[in-house]
Length: 145
Ligand SMILES: [Zn+2]
Image (cartoon, rainbow, N blue to C red; front, side, top):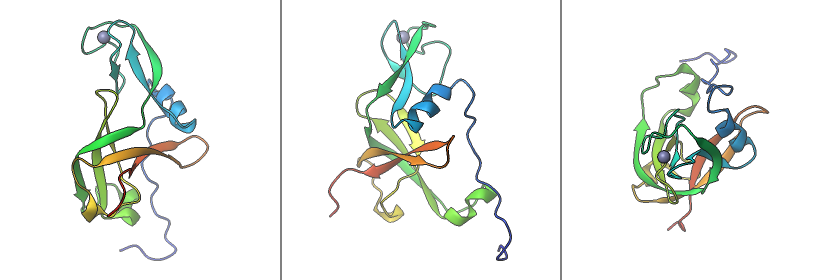
């Protein structure tokens, strides 16, 4: 239990100035940017130096689509990071993007945890935290019943 007036610990933040800097820059500008192999044209995330399919070191950063499908999800009831204590319980979803063999782990928004289902179509939401950080979240695309 946290007494009122006590400052909550900050949420953990991703490193924004590492090899994935173009990804974070893209989110700030409303795009999901990932590496695309210059040789076999496959997209990949997270960052890797060589293409996992053809081993080419050549790549560019390209925008990818914003719709995907929940492959799996998990609702956390134990608080592993003190910074998330106000979010408990929270869901983590694994989304496979429709236009590329890409998967992102994220949080759903606009849906109750007990309504989450594998196979749901989701759409990216760019959640601005502050000037430096925008997070990739997902909301359901299907009409709610
Ligand atoms: Zn390749």
